Length: 259
Picture 1 (cartoon, helix red, strand yellow):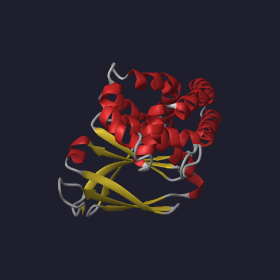
Picture 2: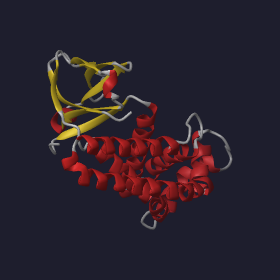
Picture 3: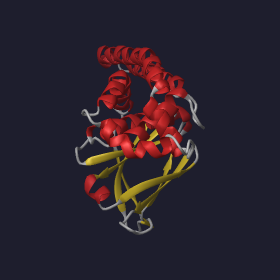
Picture 4: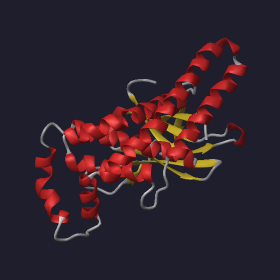
């Protein structure tokens, strides 16, 4: 993939949706830690907490993630049977996938213990729920920057617990489209329709756009159902509502056959 192309993923199945949401929450957590932004970090920590523990309207995503690893391994084994010349490399890829899946199994309980008992996160949850009016709701915004001092040690401690999971997710992210080519397409008047065939078992669409287009606020939106996806590009401008793109928009498309 060209360094200039930015991939934007759209999940079609629940398993892939769980993976994309957890992957992105982990990336936000890391970015906030590097930026020394405690409130952004707390927001990302809560997302990770809800997905790993199944809080609110979310179910624990670990079974879906591990199931996706298993499907990826089966996919590579099928490829090896069809292409014996790549059997050695694909076998190595399967072993790597199994290793990362095991890291998730062993790391999630440790991270869950931290997230369950973390006083910072409990205070933040109370804050956004608008509860405990005389307690953490008012105290946390006034002291969070002081608590964060010390080069974000609190965030680094959680990161060490999550690091094997993060590495496993990024490894799977790479493997999901390692053997899938880009297709060059054109959205006429800013719109296109993507037809999915049942035998392809597509679980993930990746729309590729040049960085220069995204810098101008041009972004894709997907709608539809399992076999027909409608793609519409819109443009976000500062201080204005989003507007549909009316010109022909070239883009790259990748359809990942893992559901």
